[in-house]
Length: 362
Image 1 (cartoon, rainbow, N blue to C red):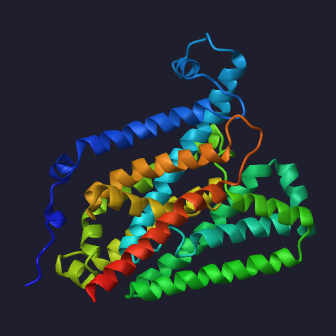
Image 2 (image 1 turned 90 degrees about the vertical axis):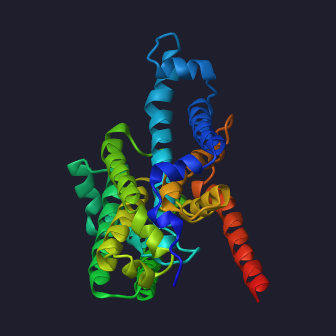
Image 3 (image 1 turned 120 degrees about the vertical axis):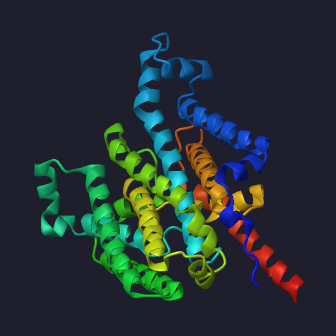
């Protein structure tokens, strides 16, 4: 008879109490330190003391510093923390659902759908007179890109959810999602062949990714969406644990496979789609953060991994954004270049570790 993993029945409070208190304190402290550094460092260096004073509402700091912190750096830091947590949780759920350590939040084509929506808006604007309409209606700049990315992501999400209700096999669903990604990528490439240089440049800049284009008004929509997705992941921890040993085992434990898979895909797509819509396609965080948490905590229990991934995902996103800004200079690096430098070594390490484990087994 197959042994039932203890974490399937584990009480979350007991599971968390067994984890290293020092490690959890380190995760929380590191997040707080990096968040404060994000507010302090940049092209203009603002002392820690002044940052704390500004956050507490004191008037002793110069007005220019208050504007920089409250209007630019604080919404940027909040966006980065939410985006990192969202991509980490989405990646964790996709890796568990498909039992594939290289699965990421965008494996079902959500990011590709958002990219196609943005490409259609940018590269067909001039030819269809859309730019004039946009200017007259006031739907300009960043908002038009967010609207286009959201529409593209929701369209692909709707198709994937419809297919998920009809298809039993997760492998089939994974392949269909990858094909959606290839189709969207091909359409974007065709559009680029017929677009102007300025249009191509604007699209390429969007693909670099950025946490700095989200305003406080946009955060009022972005933050609740991400928080709902994170809360859904917490409630799915138990069925996610069952999925670790395959659909047959999960079914034997009374898990409704289709309903659970629907909520996993819906939650992951909302998280990944909202981040792509507001920040652009941010790569590697979703695939790297879950692996780093498994290595740190040495567990696959989702009752423990979900809060850990939220903390570490937020920390790494803030750290990547901090590095991309090259504090003390006027230069800003592409965010995706920095996340790739952080995430790629993790992916390589996972592949080599699995290869060594397989060789040891043989």
